[in-house]
Amino acid sequence: MLTILGRTSSINVRKVLWTCDELALDYQQEMWGNGFRETHQPDFLALNPNAQVPVLREGEFVLWESNTICRYLAASQPETALYPHAVRARAEVERWMDWQLGDLNNAWRYLFNARMRNTPAMPDPAQLAEGEASWNRHLTLLANQLEHTGAYVTGETFTLADIVLGLSVHRWLMTPMSRPALPAIDRYYDLLRERPAFARYATQQWP
Image (cartoon, rainbow, N blue to C red):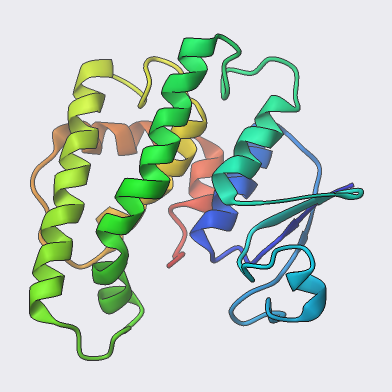
């Protein structure tokens, strides 16, 4: 049985749950993290020494890192549009997934934590301004890509890249801040909202 360890309120856990939903996979979920079981317990650390969610467990096999888990799940299934087999098409999906994890996440971290989690309680105005500018700059880059494709991040087909970036776009839209007008982002968000799983894992009141 496939088991996903992690609280649903975690954006990284929701990536994995959304992927499972799109692939129609059966799984069990164990709630770990803030408000649930403590991830610094020895039995969790034995699965992920970073003490972070999500973790996938499938028999004796254990995997952590949310984007890697999403790729593993899709690759384990018969050919799916979520994760194309063609080498260049797959590389496009992976590039945008890596960009989300490495570049986009670092752009919003300080501002989001200050505005939505009250951490730090008295944030530095200069860092807030820098975070807002950086976050908007990265979303403008994404908007340019969406203008180019006219639909989803890598083209006409919904992929894993849209799962991870769709959650990020929702977070950008829900955070109190100044945002530039980006019609391509608005169109993309409306397109994602047509998917039932997006309502379950993005548009609810998740932090």
